[in-house]
Amino acid sequence: MIPFLDLKAQYTQIKPEIDAAVMGVIASGNYVLGPQVEAFEKRFAAWCGTTECKAVNSGSSALHLALLAAGVGPGDEVITVSMTFVATAAAILQCGARPVFVDVDPLTWTMEPARIPQAITPRTKAILPVHLHGLMADMDPIMAVARRHGIVVIEDAAQAHGAEYRGRRAGSIGDLGCFSFYPGKNLGAYGEGGAVTTSNPELARKIALLRDWGQEAKYRHVVAGFNYRMDALQGAVLDVKMNHIDAWTRARRAIAAIYDHLLADSGLGRPTPPRHCRHVYHVYAIRHPRRDEALRALQDAGVGVGIHYPVPVHLQKAYETSRFPRGALPVTERLAAEFLSLPIYPEMQPEHASEAAQLLTGASLAAAQ
Ligand SMILES: *Cc1c(COP(=O)(O)O)cnc(C)c1O
Image 1: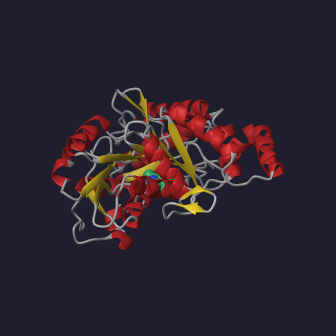
Image 2: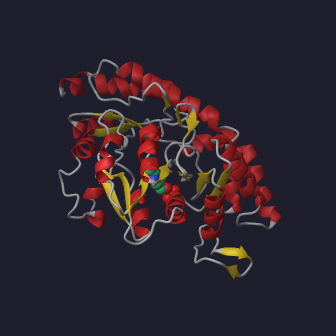
Image 3: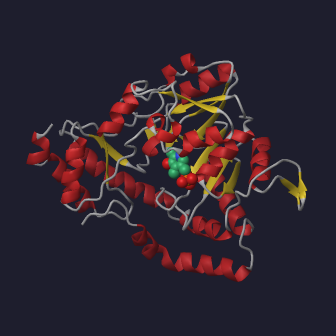
């Protein structure tokens, strides 16, 4: 058995630190926001290269509040991608705005900047690129077109903790960055969690208000807000995990290097980070022309696999519109049919990566290409 992911293996390694932090919170009597969350926010902002971080209760809440803080509202349009988790598009709809999907680059699988200009209308309020699988979108041209049109850029960095683009970290290039700390993410809480990063104090102030019922002071509500606060337990867990995130990222990259090496001559599409990008491999996906067959063969051999994502957002029943029918985003749709995610996590045994790669290059699957 080669699991897709093993969260217990990580806890086992850091149990004493985690247990002490968790017991400390329980004994403190403070369970929501508070000093542990503030300590984590400071540390995470510095690590991302921003001046501000506001912790919330999920990555989905982070996206919702970032869009609201950027002034996105009813009738507005937000340019994004369809090759993402539904939360990206759902957050736009929650603001009363409409997602306008552009296709992705066939090699990097992230937003194709050349497609943005023709998607811009007078209603375009923001661009929301997604750093898919841990590789940052091509931010320079995205920022350039946004600045030319006076449009806000919000990074969906939910899969990209510590990823870099020309030496700058995910969450620090756009006006706002949104992170998820869902347990399986590269930096995961023991429950739900998320954060918004920014170096704009005014945007940070708005996020802080919106996550806590718009309270400027106790029972003084200056804007209508939400209960999107982070639990103290999650803040404490995340603060402990910050001690290890850099080592875990290196371990992920080492597993990815094994796949890269063993699949180099396979003819299969693999992650192709540009030289100036540091990929953090939340997911290691390949493209397989007979994906479903490969998926079954790996599963039958006891290898945990996944697909991120099998159905793009514009073809999901809940998010379909006449503006983006089947065929509207050919690269995205092709990737959805070919993507196959291999097991990858920091504690993974290198031999397991070799075994999974050998199954893919072995007689039956290689012949199938
Ligand atoms: C996980 C994820 C989200 C949502 O984060 P939650 O913490 O699960 O709400 C949003 N966007 C992307 C790209 C994600 O991977």
